[in-house]
Length: 419
Image (cartoon, rainbow, N blue to C red; front, side, top):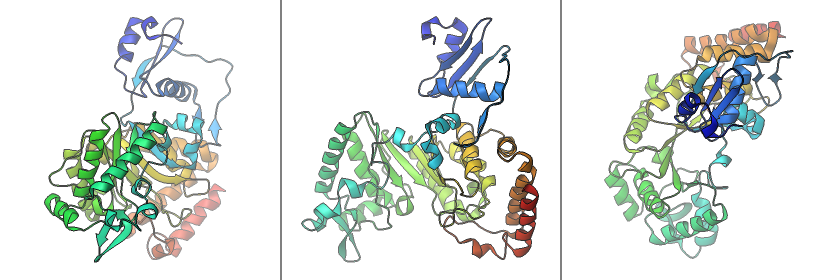
């Protein structure tokens, strides 16, 4: 409860260099100081104090450890910590719990984006139900006809309609700074003569998208306009650079999950794309996918790629992350994966092995060595067989590799011991 100008000079000087969400802990003969860099820094400082000095943990929204002590004793402390990443979202049910979010130091998209304007927003900004019957020319030309899948971004009236709708929504939510103007969730894009000309000039269907979004962003200089580099728009345009207040969400949806992206031969097209985007975009946001979306409960041994992937994204200038883990009770290693991802988003260089072992010990108790043995056995089998991992695959396709009858029997034996 100290105002900035009443802090001891050494503490105040160090606190002045904190980034948003960063914190400083310090003690003197009579006081404990928690200084904030803004945002949730003071809360995160208190959490750090409880974790590091009093061994408290919150492993999930329902599992926590607060050791009972007669006395709370602190020696001399002077330490500061800042997040490497500015936006840290681990998507799923767990993040709906505000106390859990604070302990994990993560955000939700609702904290940052206009309500209803996170991704795939063109269907809201210019709904086909309203406009298609009278103005099919507002929508994508493909296969010799107009279709409702996407709007035509070369059509001037489409721009005017989108801007008018945004003005209306921004007036209703003046506190929100980030607004998405992004493609609908399908693989169609307009190929009318004007759009095709832009695509050819830019060498990518992202060309018309970035040109359109830049024009929108110019009208809202105090806001950030977000858009997607996703599927057909993943490749960066050759000529047009995103404006400084344009956020580009680059998505990894197509990639294999069994190897780190930077090392995987099948992911080299994405490596090229993120490298190209990082050269031209100062506001790059990475949307990653870390579970099997078709079979949430089945083995999906990708824990070993989480750290190298996040470190790779950060090396490319990414400081904003959305980890789509869809955490929920009963999903495969939801609690562990969320815990590990949160720590990695704060500090990609953290000792991931130590974080995982700390979690396993606290969450599974005496069963922890056997659960760790299962995790290691899955990874070993994956590496031995050279299997890939796809985020929409059925587990049965791995019956001849890491989920062979022999491997499953060994895994079951570990669970017997854990029980």
